[in-house]
Structures are given as structure tokens and as C-alpha cells.
Image 1 (cartoon, rainbow, N blue to C red):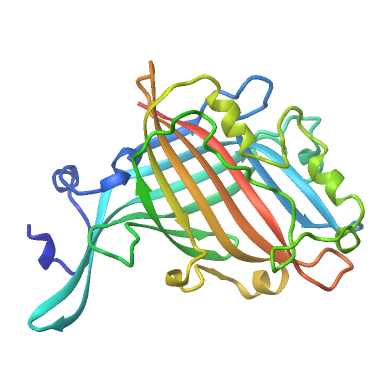
Image 2 (image 1 turned 90 degrees about the vertical axis):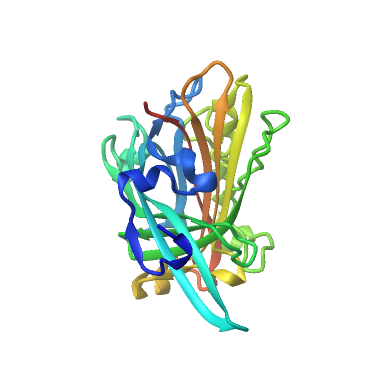
Length: 310
């Protein structure tokens, strides 16, 4: 098969898939599930999100979760054809993986998330999509992620990959759950209610630091030694993604998803035969606090440490 001449879209056969150029995505193939919870924490997976309150300006939800993330071994291939310049046809080749994500609450019986409607075993997120390896230049991006979410969202995130291992285990930046104004400035307590800082900083599940969920990734690493790491950085927040996220009208007019930034770290751990993956993802939601008129940005953050099953 001559790849440069294929301009359709199809799934490769099993034999063809083995020779497909997936680049940084090759390690993803398989099923990933929660790593053991770090000491003192209920789970390695955490969801933090602010939602409009009924009697208060907002409610800050914290939900520990378990996850199953599967990347199909069936590789998809597509070709894009552009115009011809000086007799040379502009072509782009893409290969990728179909993925399915299912996230289930691990909230304990006495947890506040039970009262919010998320007892243990409740499915809180389903997602399907594609991770794509763009084989030819694509505006400086070699990765793309296409996702569809049953809430009524679809997204295109573009990004890049790298294979430089970290010098130490302190490479995750702070992922702040504190809301901001649309211009990025600090929100006044008068805009969201005097308890907004307390809601976000008072730990619902000690010792999990819900104001900085990335702390759970740091805790999961502990003293592990990373000998190799592939990093996938993806974002809808760039001009080439065309806005990146589309929402149903109800979502747009009530709690609109503005942007998504995600980092996936595929780690080889010294002394372990199984690959480990850690991710942090922030979706910025825009909505005004209950009883207010001016919308602000509320970060919706999810983090997890996953182990690839044999």
C-alpha cells in the first residue's frame, strides 16, 4: 500500500496496523485503569467542578473516581488532499486510534458527593473520540484529539509530543481551581459569595488538595523513578482549532464550555513492567453565579494516574 496515494478514510487490517506510524501514540494501545490510590487518598482519580447553586451562588463538587480508558488496536487512516502547486499535489496523511473513556464515582457513603447525586458506582462521564498522529506538517502540530461527549459537546484539540524524561518528580504545575474573571483577573468575593474561597480550599476529602488537583499526581508518583516519558500536550485554546469546542444551545446559554487544555504523560517506571500514564485536564466553564449577572470562568479539572493492563 502506498500511503501517499490513499485519500479516503478507513480502518487498517490487523497486519497493516502493526506497521502503522503512530508516532508518540503507539504506547497508548490497550486498556488503562486506575493505579492504586496514593497513601491517605481515596482514589488516584479526582474530579473538581463548580456548578450553579440553587440557594447559593455556586456549589463546589469534589468526586473521587475510577476510570477505564481504552485505545483500540484498530488503527484508522485518513488522507487530506489540497490544491496542486507547480505540478506538486499537497497531501496530508493521518493515522490514529479510537478511544473510549468511562469514569465512575468512587464517592464513599458519607461523602458530600453522595448528597449531590454521585454515590459510588454512578457513571459521571462517558467520552469517545480519536487521537490522531499527523504525519506531515500541520501548522506546527503533530497531534490532534477529536472528542464527543453526551452532554452535547464536541471538540478539536491540537498539540505536540515530546519524549524528554523529567529531571525529578516535581514537573506538574499547579492546576488552580479558583475562578477568574473573563480577562483572567481575580474575582471579587462580592461576585460569587463570601464563601467561595472557603468552599474551594476547605478539603472535602483530606488530604486531597482540591484547590490544586495536580497534587494527587505528585502524590501518586511518590518516590518512583521515571526512566522514560512521552508527553502529549493538547489544547483547544489556539487560533488553528477554530474555537475548538462546540456546544448545544442549552449549554452555550447556561454553562458554556470555553476551552480545554490537557497533558498526558506516559511513563516508564524503574522496576515496573507496566506503563503508567498520568493526565491533568482543565475545561474552563463560563457561567454567572446564581443571582448574579456577570459571567466568570470556573475551571473544571480532572486528574488521574492509570496503569496499562497486560
